[in-house]
Length: 230
Image (cartoon, rainbow, N blue to C red; front, side):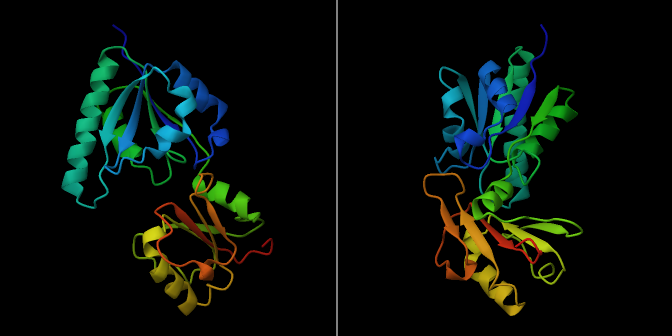
């Protein structure tokens, strides 16, 4: 029996209309839809791609929100085991992931394990959240000779803020207050902007990041742009 193929499918940031034509085709043709399970029951990627999932066999892959490498590696290995079993059975599997699978995606760790075991796997790009959020704000991320820095806000960002670049801070919801204080100390708060839950029903747009208060959620993208186009 011919082995199946695994596809890591980026479904975009939230708006189902931002799903690419290729992603939609792969989802229609797949035998099984795999999806991350962070334990919160939200199913964001599943909701975005919902129009293409009716009647499909589904596989839930645990991806807990923890920095414990041992726990994560065990979960990734179990998911890889389950995916490889489906591929051995000749099934085509589409693993859906928010945004693009090459940008801070949990899926990529599972993808590498499957490839290392000799299986065929392909990445299907999606619209990254920071591109969609910049479009929502109507700003340019970089132009001409400008440089762009993308930083995970959940980690230490102190060493990056003074670099002469346009800056994007991803997944900033839990670090809102700290990030606001940091940008203020370095003279970058006044021009900073943010979008929370871009393309989702609870989307919020903040032309002035300084006005945000409280926990706006995990999916918050903050922009500190100094370019001439902004």
